[in-house]
Length: 117
Image 1 (cartoon, helix red, strand yellow):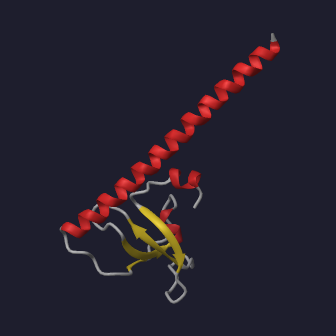
Image 2 (spheres, rainbow, N blue to C red):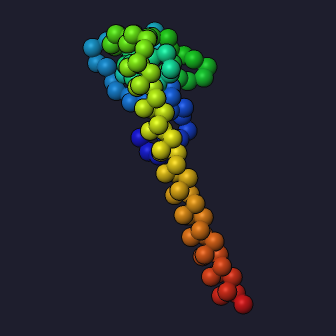
Image 3 (cartoon, rainbow, N blue to C red):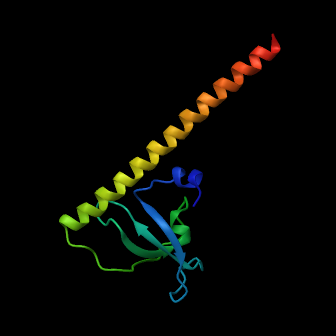
């Protein structure tokens, strides 16, 4: 996924999408996709659902868990916490890049202003 598209979605909800060939299509005839849940209730848990399930208005309703749920406790909380830490580091990197670009643009604008004099 590109950085722009990943920032447009809620990173704690769904990531990593793959086509599942051996599952029935949804009622809307769209193949199911594998996704990874990043909600607090099921962090890192994979599931299959209709590709149209994320559209508004919602068109497809096919849903199936791929793996078993983790028991509440240490590992479930650890996975969720690690995902949040990764996301915050990504956000910090984006902010640093934007600040660098801002400084570069200010420099270029100041040079452009000097040329007009």
